Length: 234
Ligand SMILES: Nc1ncnc2c1ncn2[C@@H]1O[C@H](COP(=O)(O)OP(=O)(O)OP(=O)(O)O)[C@@H](O)[C@H]1O
Image (tube, rainbow, N blue to C red; front, side, top):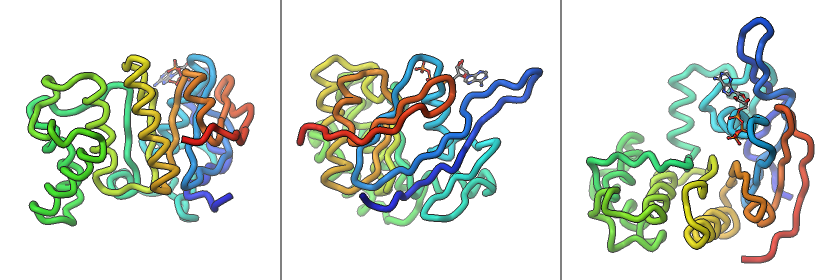
């Protein structure tokens, strides 16, 4: 068991109101590098809300979130955005690729925003990532010339643009047929098992959840169980 890179310490998220609405309550868990973690539970139980807290997209209203032992809860919006750009990759159900750009340009965007690589290196990195997703030939195509499965693999390449330690997915296979879904799940598991990243996915698909190393079950905004599983090897 490796040390968690991200630790949620009784985090909660409530919306103000009378009465307040609790999206997540008292959630504690550690996210480990090299592991594929699935968050499961019935519709509306707070899976996405928890993922957005873990991904520094939303801010907890109680508890603490520790990234590499640093409490990131009190950081400003700009600081959190910078951390997201440097340390996190996100894959959503909808790909959110920019339609006016090619696959290559979409993958290069986060690299450019981070600003650490010169243009030729950024392009080489983006091409490598697309090639690793089996998309070397599609680099110059815009999203509307790609299939749904290809678009989602471009989105994964984009999520990896800045070599994040954490990759978070919100129903990343939700729009895909079973063949493409299996391929995307294999890629996500490889990111954990072969590349040592911490991969966390919200899913309602119990077959995908069965492939996870760690299954986090939620009910009514709370974590009801965290179970380590022995998934079949890839
Ligand atoms: N901004 C908001 N304002 C009010 N209610 C919200 C808001 N965001 C989420 N909710 C509610 O909070 C609950 C948790 O939502 P969340 O999207 O986290 O659940 P989920 O488990 O991911 O659901 P699903 O599987 O259907 O996507 C739901 O009942 C949702 O309607």
